[in-house]
Image 1 (spheres, each protein chain N blue to C red):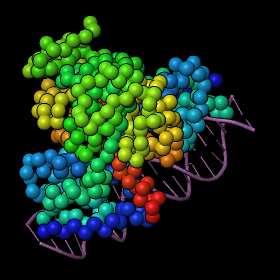
Image 2 (tube, protein in one colour):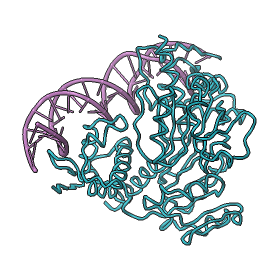
Image 3 (cartoon, each protein chain N blue to C red):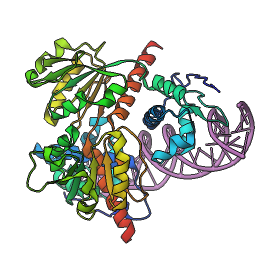
Image 4 (cartoon, helix red, strand yellow):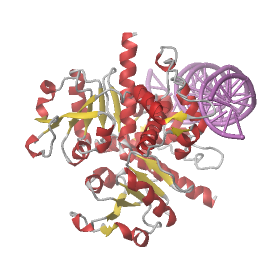
Length: 225
Length: 225
DNA sequence: ACTTGTGAAGTGTTTCACAGCC
DNA sequence: GGCTGTGAAACACTTCACAAGT
């Protein structure tokens, strides 16, 4: 087989790919990762799909925005599809991370296997009390929080993850904006204002919990109705 | 003012509210929370919106699915809108949580202020080595992981949060399914299969990072194009 | 026979434009 | 004058149906 014809449609100016598609591509990638570890050689849109209520057509449509990766009648080669999706998502490139806030949550990130698996390297950690941070490997350096501006280099520290309590997040984002940081992910439960050109995302557990409680109530009501 | 006419449209069988709407309602709720703490009395769809690239019309449309909460020419009363959104999301009710996995990540949850703020109570913690878990308040009990089935009561332990590494998640979800658990949130980076009637969500940081790296690359390419 | 890739149809979501109310 | 609420229009996303390749 080997039918990859990455026509790079998605990267052209003509078509704008939706967030939902990118999110699902990340999910397919995650599944391919597991299949590869299990030494599975081939897969189908069917098996990439059924796991989270995504239809096989959806999988094929999502992939079709970026090129032709499968063989009709056969399916997809796990390794090469994974490699192609890595290219699309940017996981084939190395990404330098900076963790801001070395508390309990910051430490989860520092020890995260998921980050290491996906080509993310934690280069720097900033904390008010840098002396308290232990167990760091060779490639990671700890700095005091007020040295943010002088120590971060947005050309090699690509993404900042802010693991600070809600009230402190906005001021850190402002400071990161001034030095030209390109991407920030923050964990806190709050909304923030960010510079136009900065990619900002939020990973707040209370949003997911709100959706869950809504859905649980919805089911209860439908049952009794 | 006081113009709340909750016609409960959304809860009727006729209309199905989209996930995006619920997610945004959670975001508005979060903002209202902050405004209330800052003793702000009134707000507008404009100020609820601009914070995350959501349009004011979108805010009004989202709210309109559930009733009429504002006053024309005036805006919304912070306290009462917050109360109404809490009702919609289920935050006005108390929710019992169970944490499965008392490692580093589990401990972040155990100490989370966000959970306490939103009427979530951690009732039970399960871990392979329950003796290692310290610093628990009165309402929380720690059990060994194999007592899952006998100690969990889905009627009062409404939501389980699984903070275990990826390979262990599926078997725990299977066990929770058997005893009739209604809602599960898991943190691990993997996909799972769940029983039809279970509300399952995933909070995996690598999905968000995948979206971020994609967007960063997208910007680079558009600039050079 | 089986599975991908895709234009077209169908469905759902967002924005527009303006009426209604303070 | 200012802001909400909403039907209708515009747009985006998903599913269908089927051609094409192995």
